[in-house]
Length: 140
Length: 140
Length: 140
Length: 140
Image (cartoon, rainbow over all chains, first blue to last red; front, side):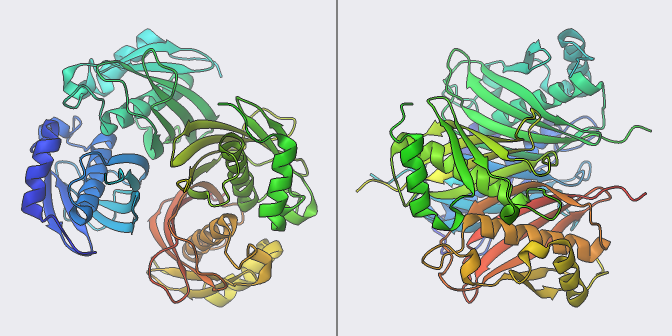
């Protein structure tokens, strides 16, 4: 699947549509096979003790699936998450960025399905695994 | 299943274990059949336009399942979410509190399964539906 | 949501579209609030020892969600399951029919979301809990 | 994770614990990185027209996750599926074997989490994607 929005343009788009999480996420890679995003470890989205919370992990998986989908279909402000299944498997390493590796499994006319693995930066055993469905509104 | 922690004690416990979300949630009801929690609609956890974000909905479902489980087994600081499946079905009403109605489907020795329906306050069609599994560490 | 196909007509329709499971399921109830279906306990779909297998429970939940959806939108042979999340919570009672209680949570133009609880006949603690999404093809 | 039960021994074990599905599945590969299983396309588990049904896909994903788990922990007749999330993404190719590629994401003391992709033999776009949790009973 070819890419229609690259990392730099996507970063600006995210700031525009999700201003409330500005500075929380960074895009490490948008390529034909995957998208890699990063949850920056700073105090605002960490629990006491430096752990990334479940909701912050959900947010990262969700935005990674969003970016993966938009990078292939173009800006669709009305696309919405309709489903997420997420398994929390290990405690994230404290005080370290969390990485999301997203791969699109299906890109249909009306929905996308994306597989996302979350890792603590520098480790290889996944912290969480999610599958997300985005509903893509019909073009007018 | 009888209740071992009531609403007032639980509210203090939540402030203690999750200080970073203090003021975000309120406990409306802890009873034998269900727990009802409220995500207070204020600017901090709303998207521009007053909409509750997906991660905020996930947070509310997660904390409601946590409260439902703790209210029956007592304080278990090490209990963790191991799985969540959530369907986002409707747009929440803008600027309105979001309510979570949680019912425990299984309370075993090592895990609980909780069903959660989310509603915009004052409406009856559910905004989202989640099922959450908490892992309960073995007593020493 | 009003009903457009009742139990008797639906039973014939199931025999027609799913001939390979003829005799496996019965429709106990199609009403405005719920659909109740029954997996008949006979040797063919039981494990040795009389237990209902996981795949048989999945089948029952899937057909109950299908019947709930069709009973409200009419016959749509092209509707397909796009997602199922299922928690298996207890061992079903051996040698006993399994009941599915299905409730539609959302019925949109292009998809339905159905919540299904499975019980062993005569007991009240749920054996499994599922959430299923059906994709409904656009009318021509 | 090293393998404690190879393909041949596992095939005999499956016949013993699941005699009712004898001949339905074949083990193509048990290696350190993955397990590959095959649903043999014959009339018994196909819908009219030669399509693999949803429940048959669920069965294949479930048995592949079971085999992946057992191949690493040894025979545990009491291990049970506690959760499955499955996305059905494409229509399987009619009359063709269905392959499951299973990868263990977590192998803890009390549970395993396995990711499974299903493909029609000879094609590369996945037909379905599942995540399964097995509960492993404590050793006595």
